Length: 299
Image (spheres, rainbow, N blue to C red):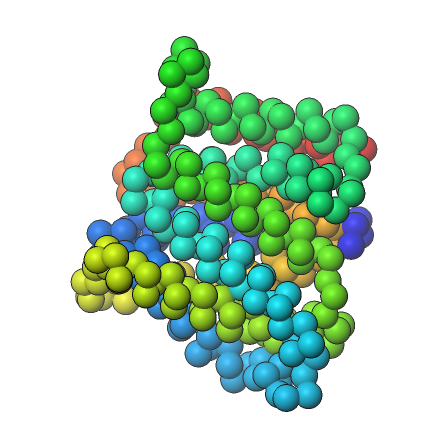
């Protein structure tokens, strides 16, 4: 962990935000076709089927996975099941640009969790940079009207996304504190399969709860099929694999700032695909977030 950034690592950490931006767009497009936890369950079930032939050795009885199964069950719960299920749920009441900008508060949650639970110390510049990012998020939450802060009323999707971001921060710190054998970490398909296997099981539980509450809907068609194929591959298998390696290399506090690129990619995709043009306050928020990235990256 805490290796210097090089071209390969930067590319590893740049690709997931681009693919996750596409995941937010796809989630918005699929929100009227299927309920959020059903989307998440099918997503990880398909990913599991794809990964099984590639990383099946990790499932052997003598694999190093089983002595550490509780860790992977927690990784699957936080990063695979809950974060993504809550993301799709948030997209039912909030636009992709808003959801991803709220997610840009991740650096400050990363720092708080790192300091409280992992004893990590941060520089003054990193703290100020994180505060600039959170100010950008507040601008989104109040829809650009600073007077509305006095009577701030969060859209349900915004609140859900804040919870999801906290869970993802915990997940990323767990990735940066590996306890499993190196043989699992060094094989990307095995490492991801171990998480996805438990994540799919957790997702099935939440999907069952959604069905029990009568909140399930599923309208099969080509749009839904293609959307599920995308979210099951690029932002799931590829992005999760690259993110896991990148976080292990540089640490979650540095990697977190790359997630602030998601709003930029989302805004561009929303404009091109959904016709949801960015507003002026989105631009102001993004400038603050970028300033936070630049300041925090300086030592």
